[in-house]
Image (cartoon, rainbow, N blue to C red; front, side, top):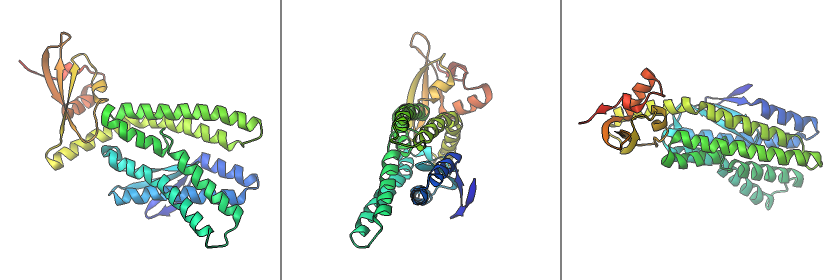
Length: 293
């Protein structure tokens, strides 16, 4: 549900976020609801400001339980350092707000109960988002680090799998805590949200990856050069398996070997992109290689 725009960015409330707010409101936790909404909003606003400062175009922000997601039209994954800075901005803002509240508490007569709620909300949201699992900020940072070594697709699968595992473990613990009366159902809502969002990240990975590759083509045309990264593949290897090893900010040259390890051809990243659209990602790389004598 859209609630308006800020700095030209559409603000959307996720159904799970609304459910959490409704559960708190119906339960008589009005201040908890308002404080949580405010903290989540400021957390996400930090992502927006950092993204815009990095020259990125932010289309919309969706507020989620314990965080949110800024939908960026540019391919942020092209530069892992930018993705890390944008992801880290949210937890750092929570840390700043936590410290600011403590500083003000010693100088102003703030209501103790509301101050405690504000501190707990920032601490829980900040720390929770640092868990290295998609769709959390920590998962985006993990993906950025891993993508330099194992490629964007594999890094996404790793981080999303971590998200699903954390959701299952958290859901199990949440069921127990709800059963003994220590926690409320919002814990289970959060676990469901993380699991479904992690699956969505995996499902979108192929689309984002192709956007990322075509963006790199434009980068090469604009800059005229990129640092090369060489790969070796057997000629029967599907194109998609080779492309999964592509790392950010490098242009890939692939040397192709036959079953006996003899050099039979070579191809480049742009040629593989074109072959993917023309022949499909499952085409053996040997079929698109330029043969060498």
